[in-house]
Length: 425
RNA sequence: GGAAAGGUGGCAGAGUGGUUGAAUGCGGCGGUCUCGAAAACCGUUAUACCGGGCGACUGGUAUCGGGGGUUCGAAUCCCCCCCUUUCCGCCA
View 1 (tube, rainbow, N blue to C red):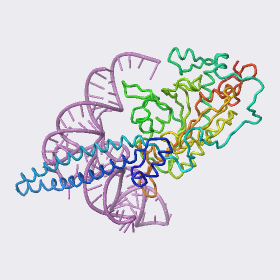
View 2: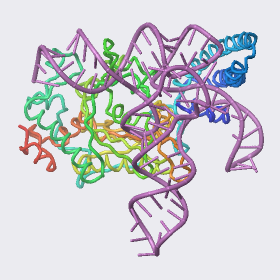
View 3: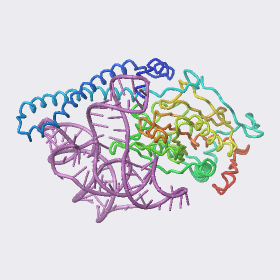
View 4: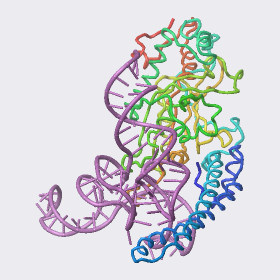
C-alpha cells in the first residue's frame, strides 16, 4: 500500500508511475474520497470533543444538585450526530481502502521504463569456464530425460492431482531434496541467514500483508472452509512473521531463509510454456526474506541477488540477470531482478529466481516497523525477498546442462554429498 | 469434535459505569551518586489519525482481541464474532 500523503502531495508523479506499470490510474478518485474523509473527521472530532468535555462536567453538576435534564437531552442529540458522521466516515474509509489496496507500488527511479518483458535489461551474464551454448549432440529436454531415467513422472502426477503436479521418483526425488538442503545450508553458512520452516497455509490477513490479496485472489488456491490459503511462496508466511511488530533497529537487517512448497493456480495460462516443469501448480522453493532499514534497502537488494547467484555459481549453471522494466514489475515491487538459467534443450533462458525490493509497500500493509534509535519513533522497514532458488526451473537447467551424450546425468560436485550418488543413469 | 478458562501498554499484572491512556512491578531511556560499575534514589517511557506552526512543538480524536448495542458518558453492562491456552476425544 502506498502512503496516502504521498498521493495527496505528488498526485502526478504517482499517476505517471502507475501508468508506467500498466496499472489502472484511480488517483482522482482517491483524492476525492480522501478529501471527504478528512472533512468528516474534522466535523466528528469537533463534536466528540464537545461531548467529552460536557460529559466530564455532568457528575459535578449532579453533585452540586443542578438539573441536568436539558444537558442530557442536548448531548443525546450530539451523540446521534456523531453516530451519523461516523457511519459516513467508515463508508468513505472502506471505499478509500478498497482502492488503495489495488494501487501498485511505485517503481524506483533506477528502473527502466518499458511496456513488457521485451523491455527488460540484461544486467550481466555468468557462464561456467569452458561453457559453450552449442553442444555436439542433440540434448534431450528435461521431460525426455525424466522419463528415460525414470526420475520424473508427470503422467501419474496428473492422475493423482491434475496436470502441473509433478512426481519425483528415485534419484530424481533424492536430487530434489539434495538441492533444497544444499541451498539452505549454503545460505546459512555463507550469507548469515536464519532458517525458518514456515506453515504452508496462511490466513487472509497474511495474504493481504504481502500483497497477494485482494488483487490476485483468482490466482490463489484457497481452502474456503477454514479461510486459509496455500502459500504461493514462502515470502508470505516469512514476511508476515513480523506483521504488527516493531523491531529493534540494532537487529536489522533481519534475514531469513526457508524452504516451502509453493502452490499456484496459474489460472488461464494453460498451453503456452506449460510443458513439464516450465509451469506447474506445485513446486519447491528456497526463499530469502529480509527486513532492513530504508536507507540500506537498495544495497541489500544487490546483496540478495548475489546470494542467489552464489548458488548457481557453486552449481556451475549458466545464468543471466535481468533488470525488470516498469511494465514487467510485479504489483508490490519497486525494483526487481530476475535470474534466468540456461536451458540447452529449450535453447533459451528460464526464470529461476526473482529478487525484489518492496520498499515500505508490504511493511505499510503488514504494519512492520522498527524503532529509530535517534528519533525514538517507529518507522516502516523495507522488505525484500528473493528465490534462492526455485528448484523446478533450476532442475530443468541442471538436468539438461549436466546430461551426457549417452543420456545420463552427472550430479554436480557440490550436491554429491547430499545425494550419495554421482550419476543418474 | 466435546468441555473449561482467558484475551488490558515492550512484558507481567490490577482495574466492574464518570479527569482511567489506564494502578503497580519488571524492562527501556535520562539523571544523581561513583575513579568506573552495581545497588539505591529521582525523572521519563504507547500508537495512529485530523488540524495549527518553517520548525522545536502544539490543539483535538481514537485505541484495553474485533464488531454491534445500552448510556450524556463504557476497559468496565448486553449481544455476535475471532483468537489463544488447558483438559478429553481423534491422530502423524
